[in-house]
Length: 479
Image 1 (cartoon, rainbow, N blue to C red):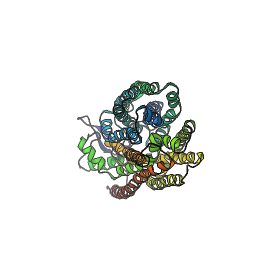
Image 2 (image 1 turned 180 degrees about the horizontal axis):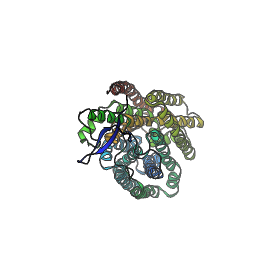
Image 3 (image 1 turned 120 degrees about the vertical axis):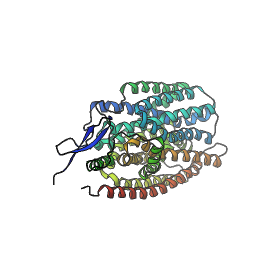
Image 4 (image 1 turned 90 degrees about the vertical axis):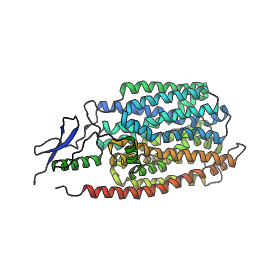
Protein backbone atom coordinates (compact mmCIF):
# COMPACT_ATOMS: atom_id res chain seq x y z
CA UNK A 1 0.00 0.00 0.00
CA UNK A 2 1.37 3.45 -0.89
CA UNK A 3 2.17 5.92 1.89
CA UNK A 4 0.41 9.24 2.17
CA UNK A 5 2.56 12.39 2.16
CA UNK A 6 1.65 15.48 4.15
CA UNK A 7 2.24 19.14 3.37
CA UNK A 8 1.35 22.55 4.79
CA UNK A 9 -1.06 24.64 2.71
CA UNK A 10 -1.97 28.31 3.23
CA UNK A 11 -5.62 28.98 4.01
CA UNK A 12 -7.50 32.20 3.35
CA UNK A 13 -7.54 33.07 7.05
CA UNK A 14 -3.73 33.19 6.96
CA UNK A 15 -3.19 30.11 9.12
CA UNK A 16 -1.34 26.99 8.13
CA UNK A 17 -3.27 23.75 7.87
CA UNK A 18 -1.91 20.27 7.34
CA UNK A 19 -3.34 18.42 4.37
CA UNK A 20 -2.55 15.31 2.41
CA UNK A 21 -1.37 14.80 -1.11
CA UNK A 22 -0.44 11.81 -3.17
CA UNK A 23 2.47 13.70 -4.72
CA UNK A 24 5.92 13.72 -3.16
CA UNK A 25 6.38 16.81 -0.99
CA UNK A 26 8.31 18.07 1.98
CA UNK A 27 7.16 16.30 5.15
CA UNK A 28 5.42 18.50 7.71
CA UNK A 29 7.77 17.31 10.43
CA UNK A 30 10.84 18.65 8.66
CA UNK A 31 12.79 21.07 10.81
CA UNK A 32 12.99 24.73 9.68
CA UNK A 33 16.66 24.59 10.67
CA UNK A 34 18.46 21.50 9.36
CA UNK A 35 22.05 22.68 9.73
CA UNK A 36 24.04 24.71 12.25
CA UNK A 37 24.54 28.08 10.56
CA UNK A 38 26.82 31.00 11.25
CA UNK A 39 23.85 33.18 12.13
CA UNK A 40 22.64 30.58 14.62
CA UNK A 41 26.07 30.54 16.28
CA UNK A 42 26.04 34.36 16.47
CA UNK A 43 22.64 34.37 18.17
CA UNK A 44 23.76 31.64 20.57
CA UNK A 45 26.96 33.51 21.45
CA UNK A 46 24.99 36.67 22.22
CA UNK A 47 22.66 34.68 24.47
CA UNK A 48 25.64 32.93 26.07
CA UNK A 49 27.37 36.23 26.89
CA UNK A 50 24.16 37.49 28.46
CA UNK A 51 23.98 34.35 30.58
CA UNK A 52 27.65 34.65 31.61
CA UNK A 53 27.12 38.20 32.87
CA UNK A 54 24.00 37.04 34.72
CA UNK A 55 26.08 34.34 36.43
CA UNK A 56 28.67 36.96 37.44
CA UNK A 57 25.95 39.00 39.10
CA UNK A 58 24.46 35.92 40.72
CA UNK A 59 27.75 34.71 42.22
CA UNK A 60 29.33 38.07 43.07
CA UNK A 61 27.84 38.22 46.56
CA UNK A 62 29.13 34.72 47.22
CA UNK A 63 32.78 35.72 46.73
CA UNK A 64 32.16 39.02 48.54
CA UNK A 65 30.39 37.37 51.46
CA UNK A 66 33.09 38.06 54.04
CA UNK A 67 33.33 41.73 52.94
CA UNK A 68 29.53 42.02 53.01
CA UNK A 69 29.48 40.95 56.68
CA UNK A 70 31.62 44.00 57.50
CA UNK A 71 30.08 46.50 55.06
CA UNK A 72 26.50 45.96 56.20
CA UNK A 73 27.31 44.91 59.82
CA UNK A 74 25.22 41.74 59.57
CA UNK A 75 25.25 38.18 60.90
CA UNK A 76 25.14 34.85 59.04
CA UNK A 77 21.34 34.71 58.78
CA UNK A 78 21.23 38.21 57.32
CA UNK A 79 24.00 37.37 54.87
CA UNK A 80 22.07 34.28 53.83
CA UNK A 81 19.04 36.48 53.18
CA UNK A 82 20.94 38.17 50.33
CA UNK A 83 21.15 34.89 48.46
CA UNK A 84 17.76 33.62 49.63
CA UNK A 85 16.02 36.76 48.36
CA UNK A 86 17.84 36.83 45.03
CA UNK A 87 17.43 33.12 44.40
CA UNK A 88 13.83 33.21 45.64
CA UNK A 89 12.94 36.02 43.25
CA UNK A 90 14.78 34.20 40.46
CA UNK A 91 12.83 31.01 41.15
CA UNK A 92 9.44 32.69 41.51
CA UNK A 93 10.05 34.70 38.34
CA UNK A 94 10.65 31.61 36.21
CA UNK A 95 7.04 30.88 35.24
CA UNK A 96 6.03 34.55 34.69
CA UNK A 97 9.22 35.06 32.69
CA UNK A 98 8.51 31.93 30.67
CA UNK A 99 5.02 33.20 29.86
CA UNK A 100 6.45 36.56 28.77
CA UNK A 101 9.06 34.86 26.57
CA UNK A 102 6.43 32.61 25.00
CA UNK A 103 4.36 35.70 24.19
CA UNK A 104 6.78 38.53 23.31
CA UNK A 105 9.95 36.62 22.48
CA UNK A 106 13.32 35.97 24.08
CA UNK A 107 15.15 38.98 22.62
CA UNK A 108 13.08 41.74 24.22
CA UNK A 109 12.86 39.87 27.50
CA UNK A 110 16.62 39.31 27.74
CA UNK A 111 17.48 42.92 26.90
CA UNK A 112 15.12 44.28 29.55
CA UNK A 113 16.47 41.72 32.01
CA UNK A 114 20.04 42.91 31.43
CA UNK A 115 19.02 46.50 32.16
CA UNK A 116 17.27 45.44 35.38
CA UNK A 117 20.41 43.60 36.51
CA UNK A 118 22.51 46.69 35.78
CA UNK A 119 20.20 48.81 37.95
CA UNK A 120 20.49 46.37 40.84
CA UNK A 121 24.29 46.38 40.69
CA UNK A 122 24.39 50.20 40.80
CA UNK A 123 22.34 50.16 44.00
CA UNK A 124 24.55 47.46 45.55
CA UNK A 125 27.65 49.49 44.65
CA UNK A 126 26.68 52.68 46.46
CA UNK A 127 24.45 51.69 49.35
CA UNK A 128 25.56 50.81 52.86
CA UNK A 129 21.97 50.17 53.92
CA UNK A 130 21.21 46.49 54.39
CA UNK A 131 17.46 46.78 53.53
CA UNK A 132 18.25 48.72 50.34
CA UNK A 133 20.89 46.16 49.39
CA UNK A 134 18.31 43.40 49.80
CA UNK A 135 15.97 45.30 47.45
CA UNK A 136 18.83 45.55 44.95
CA UNK A 137 19.22 41.78 45.05
CA UNK A 138 15.53 41.55 44.12
CA UNK A 139 16.29 43.49 40.92
CA UNK A 140 19.31 41.31 40.18
CA UNK A 141 17.31 38.12 40.70
CA UNK A 142 14.47 39.34 38.45
CA UNK A 143 16.86 40.31 35.66
CA UNK A 144 18.85 37.10 36.03
CA UNK A 145 15.65 35.08 35.52
CA UNK A 146 15.48 36.13 31.86
CA UNK A 147 18.95 35.02 30.74
CA UNK A 148 18.93 31.23 30.87
CA UNK A 149 15.25 30.86 29.98
CA UNK A 150 15.72 33.13 26.99
CA UNK A 151 18.71 31.12 25.82
CA UNK A 152 16.79 27.84 26.20
CA UNK A 153 13.91 29.26 24.14
CA UNK A 154 16.26 30.31 21.34
CA UNK A 155 18.01 26.94 20.97
CA UNK A 156 15.15 24.91 19.41
CA UNK A 157 14.32 27.82 17.10
CA UNK A 158 17.85 28.08 15.71
CA UNK A 159 19.43 24.62 15.94
CA UNK A 160 18.53 21.10 14.75
CA UNK A 161 16.84 19.10 17.48
CA UNK A 162 19.58 16.46 17.35
CA UNK A 163 22.17 18.95 18.68
CA UNK A 164 20.06 20.95 21.13
CA UNK A 165 21.00 18.75 24.14
CA UNK A 166 24.66 19.45 23.39
CA UNK A 167 24.09 23.20 23.08
CA UNK A 168 21.99 23.15 26.25
CA UNK A 169 24.95 21.75 28.17
CA UNK A 170 27.41 24.05 26.40
CA UNK A 171 25.29 27.03 27.42
CA UNK A 172 25.02 25.88 31.01
CA UNK A 173 28.69 24.89 31.19
CA UNK A 174 30.25 27.90 29.48
CA UNK A 175 27.90 30.13 31.45
CA UNK A 176 29.92 29.13 34.51
CA UNK A 177 32.72 31.30 33.16
CA UNK A 178 30.74 33.92 35.04
CA UNK A 179 31.69 32.14 38.24
CA UNK A 180 35.35 32.28 37.18
CA UNK A 181 35.00 36.01 36.51
CA UNK A 182 33.55 36.47 40.00
CA UNK A 183 36.26 34.37 41.65
CA UNK A 184 39.25 35.96 39.88
CA UNK A 185 38.96 39.37 38.16
CA UNK A 186 35.95 40.60 40.17
CA UNK A 187 37.51 39.48 43.46
CA UNK A 188 40.80 41.11 42.44
CA UNK A 189 39.01 44.41 41.74
CA UNK A 190 37.15 44.09 45.05
CA UNK A 191 40.38 43.66 47.02
CA UNK A 192 42.41 46.20 45.02
CA UNK A 193 39.91 48.99 44.34
CA UNK A 194 37.14 48.37 46.84
CA UNK A 195 33.43 47.63 46.92
CA UNK A 196 32.10 50.50 44.78
CA UNK A 197 34.35 50.07 41.70
CA UNK A 198 33.88 46.29 41.79
CA UNK A 199 30.10 46.39 41.68
CA UNK A 200 30.01 49.33 39.26
CA UNK A 201 31.98 47.15 36.84
CA UNK A 202 29.14 44.61 36.98
CA UNK A 203 26.59 47.33 36.25
CA UNK A 204 28.59 48.45 33.22
CA UNK A 205 28.70 44.87 31.97
CA UNK A 206 24.90 44.70 32.23
CA UNK A 207 24.51 47.80 30.07
CA UNK A 208 26.93 46.44 27.47
CA UNK A 209 25.18 43.10 27.09
CA UNK A 210 21.84 44.89 26.70
CA UNK A 211 23.34 46.66 23.69
CA UNK A 212 24.78 43.39 22.36
CA UNK A 213 21.38 41.75 22.75
CA UNK A 214 19.60 44.48 20.80
CA UNK A 215 22.06 44.05 17.93
CA UNK A 216 22.70 40.30 17.77
CA UNK A 217 19.71 38.44 19.22
CA UNK A 218 16.75 37.26 17.10
CA UNK A 219 13.83 35.11 18.20
CA UNK A 220 13.61 32.97 15.04
CA UNK A 221 15.49 32.66 11.74
CA UNK A 222 14.48 35.35 9.28
CA UNK A 223 13.19 32.78 6.77
CA UNK A 224 11.28 30.73 9.34
CA UNK A 225 7.55 31.36 9.68
CA UNK A 226 7.11 29.07 12.67
CA UNK A 227 9.08 27.96 15.71
CA UNK A 228 10.47 24.46 16.06
CA UNK A 229 8.04 21.67 16.81
CA UNK A 230 8.76 19.32 19.68
CA UNK A 231 9.09 15.60 18.97
CA UNK A 232 5.65 14.94 20.42
CA UNK A 233 4.10 17.69 18.30
CA UNK A 234 5.50 16.15 15.14
CA UNK A 235 3.67 12.94 15.86
CA UNK A 236 0.53 14.88 16.80
CA UNK A 237 0.76 16.96 13.63
CA UNK A 238 0.92 13.89 11.44
CA UNK A 239 -2.01 12.35 13.30
CA UNK A 240 -4.01 15.59 12.95
CA UNK A 241 -3.22 15.63 9.26
CA UNK A 242 -4.62 12.13 8.89
CA UNK A 243 -7.75 13.17 10.77
CA UNK A 244 -8.22 16.15 8.47
CA UNK A 245 -7.72 13.99 5.40
CA UNK A 246 -10.42 11.64 6.64
CA UNK A 247 -12.90 14.47 7.05
CA UNK A 248 -12.25 15.27 10.70
CA UNK A 249 -11.50 18.60 12.29
CA UNK A 250 -8.27 20.25 11.25
CA UNK A 251 -5.71 21.72 13.62
CA UNK A 252 -3.95 25.03 13.28
CA UNK A 253 -0.30 25.43 14.02
CA UNK A 254 -0.20 28.86 15.68
CA UNK A 255 -3.18 28.72 18.04
CA UNK A 256 -2.26 30.69 21.18
CA UNK A 257 -3.14 29.57 24.68
CA UNK A 258 -4.43 31.88 27.40
CA UNK A 259 -2.29 32.42 30.49
CA UNK A 260 -4.62 30.15 32.44
CA UNK A 261 -4.34 27.40 29.83
CA UNK A 262 -0.57 27.80 29.76
CA UNK A 263 -0.28 27.47 33.53
CA UNK A 264 -2.62 24.48 33.61
CA UNK A 265 -0.75 22.73 30.81
CA UNK A 266 2.60 23.18 32.52
CA UNK A 267 1.68 22.60 36.17
CA UNK A 268 -0.26 19.41 35.39
CA UNK A 269 2.45 17.95 33.15
CA UNK A 270 4.45 15.28 35.07
CA UNK A 271 7.52 15.71 32.86
CA UNK A 272 7.75 19.37 33.96
CA UNK A 273 7.76 18.24 37.60
CA UNK A 274 10.33 15.57 36.82
CA UNK A 275 12.47 18.37 35.40
CA UNK A 276 11.80 20.46 38.53
CA UNK A 277 13.13 17.80 40.90
CA UNK A 278 15.96 16.87 38.53
CA UNK A 279 17.08 20.47 38.80
CA UNK A 280 16.45 20.51 42.58
CA UNK A 281 18.70 17.53 43.35
CA UNK A 282 21.30 18.32 40.70
CA UNK A 283 21.95 22.03 41.22
CA UNK A 284 21.37 22.74 44.91
CA UNK A 285 24.85 21.69 46.14
CA UNK A 286 26.57 23.74 43.45
CA UNK A 287 24.50 26.86 44.11
CA UNK A 288 24.75 26.71 47.90
CA UNK A 289 28.53 26.45 47.63
CA UNK A 290 29.21 28.99 44.87
CA UNK A 291 26.49 31.54 45.63
CA UNK A 292 27.00 31.92 49.36
CA UNK A 293 28.46 29.40 51.77
CA UNK A 294 31.48 28.09 49.86
CA UNK A 295 33.85 30.97 50.64
CA UNK A 296 32.88 31.21 54.34
CA UNK A 297 33.17 27.41 54.68
CA UNK A 298 36.65 27.39 53.15
CA UNK A 299 38.00 30.56 54.79
CA UNK A 300 36.33 30.46 58.21
CA UNK A 301 35.68 26.74 58.59
CA UNK A 302 38.80 25.30 56.95
CA UNK A 303 41.17 28.23 57.44
CA UNK A 304 42.07 28.60 53.76
CA UNK A 305 43.53 31.81 52.36
CA UNK A 306 41.40 33.84 49.90
CA UNK A 307 43.75 32.87 47.07
CA UNK A 308 43.41 29.17 47.92
CA UNK A 309 39.62 29.43 48.07
CA UNK A 310 39.59 31.23 44.71
CA UNK A 311 41.55 28.37 43.13
CA UNK A 312 38.86 25.95 44.32
CA UNK A 313 36.17 28.05 42.62
CA UNK A 314 38.20 28.18 39.41
CA UNK A 315 38.57 24.38 39.45
CA UNK A 316 34.83 24.15 40.06
CA UNK A 317 34.17 26.30 37.00
CA UNK A 318 36.51 24.27 34.80
CA UNK A 319 34.80 21.06 35.92
CA UNK A 320 31.40 22.41 34.86
CA UNK A 321 32.72 23.55 31.48
CA UNK A 322 34.44 20.23 30.75
CA UNK A 323 31.59 18.07 32.02
CA UNK A 324 28.85 20.02 30.23
CA UNK A 325 29.38 18.71 26.68
CA UNK A 326 29.98 15.19 28.00
CA UNK A 327 26.71 15.31 29.92
CA UNK A 328 25.02 16.66 26.79
CA UNK A 329 26.12 13.56 24.87
CA UNK A 330 24.92 11.33 27.72
CA UNK A 331 21.53 13.03 27.67
CA UNK A 332 21.21 12.71 23.89
CA UNK A 333 22.20 9.03 23.95
CA UNK A 334 20.02 7.95 26.89
CA UNK A 335 16.89 9.84 25.78
CA UNK A 336 13.93 8.99 27.97
CA UNK A 337 16.16 6.73 30.08
CA UNK A 338 18.23 9.74 31.21
CA UNK A 339 16.16 9.86 34.41
CA UNK A 340 18.00 6.74 35.63
CA UNK A 341 21.27 8.65 35.35
CA UNK A 342 19.69 11.55 37.24
CA UNK A 343 18.68 9.38 40.21
CA UNK A 344 22.15 7.82 40.46
CA UNK A 345 23.99 11.15 40.30
CA UNK A 346 21.65 12.80 42.81
CA UNK A 347 22.49 10.08 45.32
CA UNK A 348 26.24 10.21 44.62
CA UNK A 349 26.43 14.00 45.02
CA UNK A 350 24.89 13.91 48.48
CA UNK A 351 27.08 10.97 49.50
CA UNK A 352 30.21 12.93 48.51
CA UNK A 353 29.26 15.78 50.84
CA UNK A 354 28.43 13.44 53.72
CA UNK A 355 31.86 11.81 53.43
CA UNK A 356 33.55 15.22 53.25
CA UNK A 357 31.79 16.58 56.35
CA UNK A 358 32.10 13.40 58.43
CA UNK A 359 35.53 14.13 60.06
CA UNK A 360 35.47 16.25 63.23
CA UNK A 361 38.46 18.26 61.98
CA UNK A 362 38.80 20.14 58.66
CA UNK A 363 39.92 17.86 55.79
CA UNK A 364 43.00 18.56 53.71
CA UNK A 365 42.98 21.13 50.92
CA UNK A 366 42.89 18.43 48.25
CA UNK A 367 39.61 17.09 49.70
CA UNK A 368 37.62 20.26 48.95
CA UNK A 369 39.13 20.26 45.44
CA UNK A 370 37.93 16.68 44.84
CA UNK A 371 34.48 17.57 46.20
CA UNK A 372 34.24 20.50 43.78
CA UNK A 373 35.35 18.45 40.79
CA UNK A 374 32.69 15.83 41.49
CA UNK A 375 29.97 18.26 42.58
CA UNK A 376 30.41 20.57 39.60
CA UNK A 377 30.95 17.84 37.02
CA UNK A 378 28.13 15.54 38.08
CA UNK A 379 25.83 18.47 38.84
CA UNK A 380 25.60 19.20 35.12
CA UNK A 381 22.89 16.53 35.07
CA UNK A 382 20.54 19.20 36.48
CA UNK A 383 20.04 20.29 32.86
CA UNK A 384 18.72 16.87 31.81
CA UNK A 385 15.26 18.02 32.85
CA UNK A 386 15.28 20.71 30.16
CA UNK A 387 15.90 18.08 27.48
CA UNK A 388 12.94 16.03 28.70
CA UNK A 389 10.69 19.11 28.76
CA UNK A 390 11.76 20.10 25.25
CA UNK A 391 10.98 16.61 23.93
CA UNK A 392 7.64 16.06 25.65
CA UNK A 393 5.98 19.47 26.15
CA UNK A 394 4.00 21.53 23.64
CA UNK A 395 6.25 24.16 22.03
CA UNK A 396 3.65 26.89 22.71
CA UNK A 397 4.44 26.58 26.42
CA UNK A 398 8.08 25.53 26.08
CA UNK A 399 9.61 28.51 27.89
CA UNK A 400 7.03 28.28 30.66
CA UNK A 401 7.62 24.55 31.08
CA UNK A 402 11.37 25.12 31.10
CA UNK A 403 10.80 27.85 33.68
CA UNK A 404 9.03 25.44 36.02
CA UNK A 405 11.88 22.94 35.64
CA UNK A 406 14.45 25.69 36.19
CA UNK A 407 12.82 26.68 39.48
CA UNK A 408 13.79 23.45 41.23
CA UNK A 409 17.45 24.03 41.99
CA UNK A 410 16.86 27.61 43.08
CA UNK A 411 13.93 26.83 45.36
CA UNK A 412 16.17 24.21 46.99
CA UNK A 413 19.04 26.71 47.22
CA UNK A 414 16.82 29.36 48.79
CA UNK A 415 15.58 26.95 51.46
CA UNK A 416 18.95 25.35 52.17
CA UNK A 417 20.98 28.58 52.18
CA UNK A 418 18.65 30.17 54.70
CA UNK A 419 18.59 26.95 56.71
CA UNK A 420 22.40 26.87 56.90
CA UNK A 421 22.48 30.47 58.13
CA UNK A 422 19.82 29.74 60.75
CA UNK A 423 21.70 26.71 62.10
CA UNK A 424 25.03 28.59 62.08
CA UNK A 425 23.57 31.33 64.24
CA UNK A 426 22.18 28.75 66.67
CA UNK A 427 25.51 26.90 66.82
CA UNK A 428 27.63 30.08 67.08
CA UNK A 429 25.55 33.03 68.35
CA UNK A 430 28.77 35.03 68.86
CA UNK A 431 29.55 34.84 65.13
CA UNK A 432 32.65 32.68 65.63
CA UNK A 433 32.03 30.20 62.82
CA UNK A 434 34.24 27.11 62.87
CA UNK A 435 34.43 23.76 61.09
CA UNK A 436 32.13 22.23 63.70
CA UNK A 437 29.47 24.93 63.24
CA UNK A 438 29.56 24.46 59.46
CA UNK A 439 29.05 20.72 59.93
CA UNK A 440 25.92 21.55 61.92
CA UNK A 441 24.81 24.14 59.37
CA UNK A 442 25.10 21.66 56.50
CA UNK A 443 22.40 19.49 58.08
CA UNK A 444 19.95 21.90 56.43
CA UNK A 445 21.38 20.91 53.05
CA UNK A 446 20.85 17.22 53.80
CA UNK A 447 17.22 17.85 54.79
CA UNK A 448 16.39 19.89 51.69
CA UNK A 449 18.10 17.32 49.45
CA UNK A 450 16.04 14.51 51.02
CA UNK A 451 12.80 16.34 50.21
CA UNK A 452 13.93 16.79 46.61
CA UNK A 453 15.07 13.19 46.22
CA UNK A 454 11.68 11.87 47.35
CA UNK A 455 10.01 14.31 44.96
CA UNK A 456 12.25 13.08 42.15
CA UNK A 457 11.27 9.46 42.70
CA UNK A 458 7.55 10.34 42.80
CA UNK A 459 7.78 12.53 39.69
CA UNK A 460 9.79 9.86 37.88
CA UNK A 461 6.99 7.33 38.31
CA UNK A 462 4.29 9.80 37.26
CA UNK A 463 6.26 10.87 34.17
CA UNK A 464 6.89 7.25 33.20
CA UNK A 465 3.15 6.50 33.33
CA UNK A 466 2.38 9.62 31.29
CA UNK A 467 4.96 8.83 28.60
CA UNK A 468 3.79 5.21 28.40
CA UNK A 469 0.17 6.32 27.92
CA UNK A 470 1.19 8.81 25.24
CA UNK A 471 3.28 6.19 23.46
CA UNK A 472 0.36 3.75 23.36
CA UNK A 473 -1.84 6.50 21.96
CA UNK A 474 0.69 7.39 19.26
CA UNK A 475 1.11 3.75 18.23
CA UNK A 476 -2.59 3.23 17.58
CA UNK A 477 -3.17 2.41 13.87
CA UNK A 478 -4.40 5.38 11.86
CA UNK A 479 -5.55 3.57 8.75
